Image (cartoon, rainbow, N blue to C red):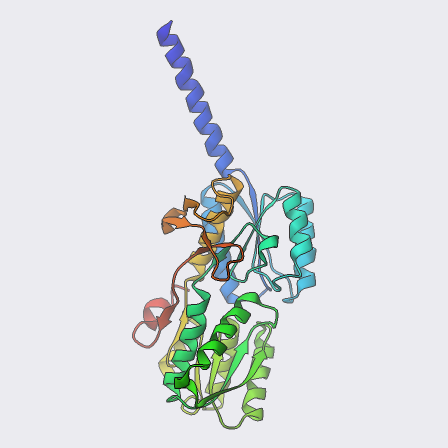
Amino acid sequence: MKKLLVGVFVLIMMFSVVGFAAAQADGTYALVVKSAGNPFMERVREGFAEAVEAQGGEVIYRAPAEPTVSAQIAIIEQLITQRVNVIAIAANDRDALQPALQRAMNRGIKVLSLDSAVNPQSRMVHVNQADPELIGRVQIQAISEMIGGEGQIAILSATSQATNQNLWIEYMKDELKKPKYEDIELVRVAYGDDLRDKSVAETEALLQTYPDLKGIIAPTTVGIAAAARVLSTRNLGDEIALTGLGLPSEMAEYIKSGVCEWMYLWNPIDLGYLGGETAVALDNEVITGEVGETFEAGRLGERKVVETLSGEGTEIMLGEPFKFDKSNIDEWKDVY
C-alpha cells in the first residue's frame, strides 16, 4: 500500500511539473515598436522572439507605418481584443498611451515598456537599455573631445515625444552647464522622427542654417546613419564631428573612414531578449514590477527590479553603453 501511495504521489508530481512547464510556455506576447523599417527595432524583435519562443510562447510583432501615438493606440486596442497575455511597447509618447494601456491592464494583460518608456501608471515595469544619465552625459563628453572643447553643436533626435530621447537630451543639456563646456554652444535640437529621409533633410537643414557648425550628436540609430551619409557625401567628415548611438553594421564604413570617430550603443538583441524574459516573468507572476524583486533572465542571468532615477516607477537595467571605434568595429559589424 505504501509503495502504491508513493507511486501515485510521484505521478502527481510528474503531472504537476508538466503542467507547470506548460504554464510557463503558454502565452501570446506582443511587441509593439515605434515604427516599421527601424533596424534597431528589428534587432530588438529578434531578441524578444528568442526569449519567448525558447519557452514555447507565441510572439506578435506590431510596427506602425509612422511613428505616431494614434497608430500605437490602434494597435493596443487590437491586441486587447485579441486577449494577448503581455504587451511590451517602445513608446512614441510617455503619457498619451496611458488610457489604452490601462484598459489593457484592467483586462488582465501584463504591460511593460522597453527602450522608450511610458509613464509608471501605464506599465508594470520598464526595461531600460542603460543608465539614461550616463547615456546623455557620455555623448556630450565625446563631442567635446572631438571638437576640441569649443564650437557650435546640434542634436539630431528621433521624435519630439520619444521619452528616452528626451531624457538623454535633458542630461546632455545639464552636462553642458559645466564650466568646461562654456565654449560649446548647442544651437538646435532637430527631429528626424526616426525616418531616414526626414533625418537626412534635417541634417541638410542644420548644415545650411549653421555654417559654423562643428559637431552633431544623433542619439538614434536612424539619425546617426542619415547624418553620416550626408557628411560623407558632402566630404565634411574632417570639418564636422559626429557621434551618438548607432548600429555597428550600419556605421562601420563611416567609422573606418573617420566620418564618425566613435559612437555608442548597447546590444539591441539583448535588450529585446531581456524584454522577452521580463514579459514571461510578469505573465507567470514571478515578478510584479515591485522594487527588489529578482528573476532569472535566461542567458543574461539574474536581473533585479529597481526604482528609476526619477523615483517614478520601476525598471530593469540591461547595462552600460558600449563604445565603438576603429579598434573594434570589425568585431561587431557582422553581429548587429
